[in-house]
Amino acid sequence: MRAISGLWRWRHNPLRRGTDLAEAWVGLVALSLILVVGPVIGALVGGTAEDALMRSVREQRESRHLVTATVVRKLDRSPLDADPETASGRELRSRVLADWTAPDGTARHGTATAPLQTPHPGDHFTLWTDQRGRMVTRPLDSATATTHAVLAGFGAALLTAGVVEGGRQLLVWRMVRRRYARWDQAWDRAGPDWGRTGTGS
Image 1 (cartoon, one colour):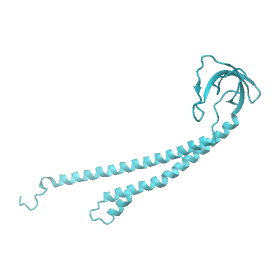
Image 2 (tube, one colour):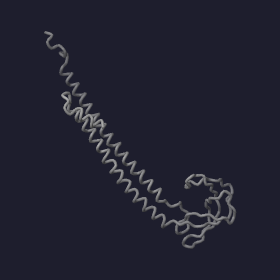
Image 3 (spheres, helix red, strand yellow):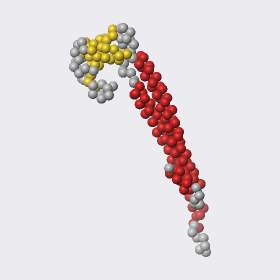
Image 4 (cartoon, one colour):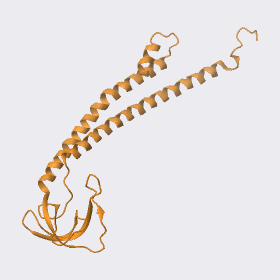
């Protein structure tokens, strides 16, 4: 808005300098780029990120499987941990020795984390594995992928606005420096005779 008001204010002002009008035009162009180019870049980056993340979601859903495991025994000296993948982060988990069957039918046996506060032999719980029964993390869900894509697009739009504003400030700074340099040259040309015109000296 300051760029628009600046252009209007200097439009027919007899004291207008070329640099004043140039600064106003630079501000107007920067504002236009922020309002037009920024959202476009944000939408493109967000769309690209969403496509890539959704492909990852589909691939993980195809390659990761939820299987049921059976507790063999609780491992000693294994403190309870909070599950980082739960929404509240408060679900207690215990390390146990467990048996489970892989999606390809292979029997698996090993250490796992169970969402059980006091696991007992024979208790059942679910865990995510790949096709061969190796434990993997929970697959990415669509809602999380969309959220990440929106954040990526928003960040790209903000970055674009920052770059444009930085470029505007750099241009204005160089204009002001050039203006001051011209003023110094004018003062040097005036020299010691400044203000003595008509004094008879």
